[in-house]
Amino acid sequence: MTKTLITGEGWLDQLLPNGIPMPSSTLISGPGGTGKPLVEFAFVSAWLKSGGSVIGMPLQYPTGEMVKTAMYKLYGMDMDEYKGKVAYVQLDPSLYDVEPVSGDTLKANLVKPGVWKQTISMAEEMLDETDNRNVMVFGSALNLLLFSDVHKERLLADLRGMLQNDNKRSYFFAVSTSALVKDIKRLEQAADNLMYTRMEEDMKLFFRIERMRYVDFKTSEVNVPISEDMLKEIRKVATSSRKRLIKEIKKVA
Image (cartoon, rainbow, N blue to C red; front, side):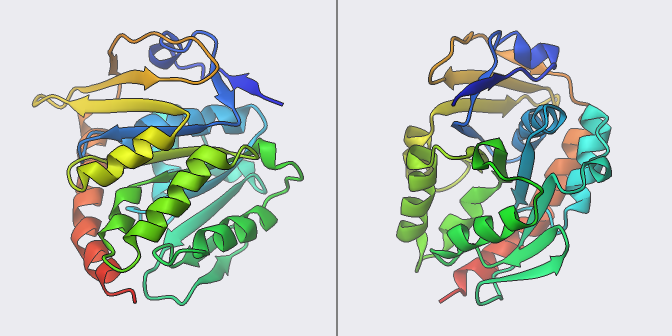
């Protein structure tokens, strides 16, 4: 059964007056360093507050602690208050497949096709959740995985399959269009809902909705009220991890 989620964030709800359908698949696309995961976190915060559970795969963050910090600074959410509702997945291209790190965290080599399904299944076992429709899988910097010359096509097929065909849970993915534009376009075409971010030289972040399935929306562009310091911080983290991860991803056989 589909329900709608209203975030409670004025800048976002004005574009989605009736909310966003859940479960559904959403892709937030735009150039690198334009705050896509920070917008994504607005939906994550609202979903947790509504009683849902989440599996976080922010590939550019080395640990879940950075997600916790951003969620608190942006949306006043203490993730530690949601024990049993949150599971984290850290990207580790050196692993064979998946291994647990703690009671709420896994490490996974998400570059290898087939590992995605295994990882989500293991992460769901960490949640106090019995209905997949109450689970949101969110991830950012997924474009990094596509730098694998060996696995790119199968990864694209897996990701497209999740976005198009898995109606048991919700997906929120953020991808950069700064490289591999044709591949990213294939993911954009697969998602139920498509959104874009961009940033001006003065570090002002803008957001708009391109497409929604099942609900009405407004096409106007809005300025996202996120501080310049926060935007610089997220860009710094993404830049510092990007080169290292791409190098490791290219080595996966």
